[in-house]
Length: 330
Figure 1 (cartoon, one colour):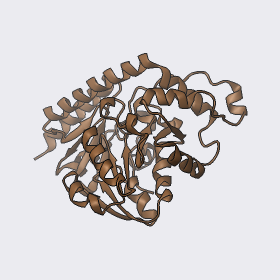
Figure 2 (cartoon, rainbow, N blue to C red):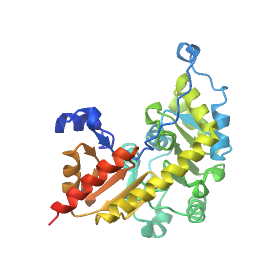
Figure 3 (spheres, rainbow, N blue to C red):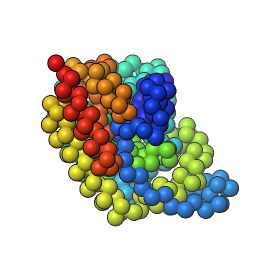
Figure 4 (cartoon, rainbow, N blue to C red):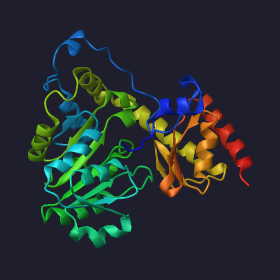
């Protein structure tokens, strides 16, 4: 299993701080979960059915012609490599590590490349995987550039896989409306923007033929009845979505300014997190953890990611910890 954020109980055991005393900024999730509707008893008692309106709500929300609900976009990340013969796969990196891992495990040759290297390697690739906006760097690529890459891949039967897990705040950058194109696959995460990661829901947007093949791999009843009810309600709640976009945009900017004020200028980020490379990454992570503030550490490039505080008390706690840290840096 790869290392991920959100492993709060592991931190509880390691640092001896009670779970209730932690400020968890490690996951990049919106810290204001949407209200969960009442779940009728029949949703627990019966197998889920696919004519309850979830797919229709998702198509309307994403602006996509076809969707396949899955139990979290991680499910699709692991299953998509099974739908192709072994080939050469480029992964725009650094990014969410499960992408490269999934393609390698399925026997594909994986090359992790930078944005500047894509045009050089693209003609040799069967699949290109891009996270947009990227996690953890926050890099945002234009739809025009991505569609150009897709067109070049599609001419040879290749795929462009775009993970849009953090796209909800910037829908103008989404390729969802283009997901009818052969060889274009868009992955959407429900839990991050809606603040409901425990629901385990995601969507794959692609042409119907590919979605049918993927559905066979996912299997029947993969998304539970209660999850379908929660997902549909949130996808239809346009007023709550607008509030979430506004407060996460404000909080993302506030976080960037707070870090910069303490000489920790972020190199990237989006509405839900900020990311910075610093030679003090290990020390910063440990300093914060000892005070019950959990960050996401990336040791390979000495960087850390900060998620959003939820309350004014959380903001004050983070600010005080940052102030104390800057006083200790030589």
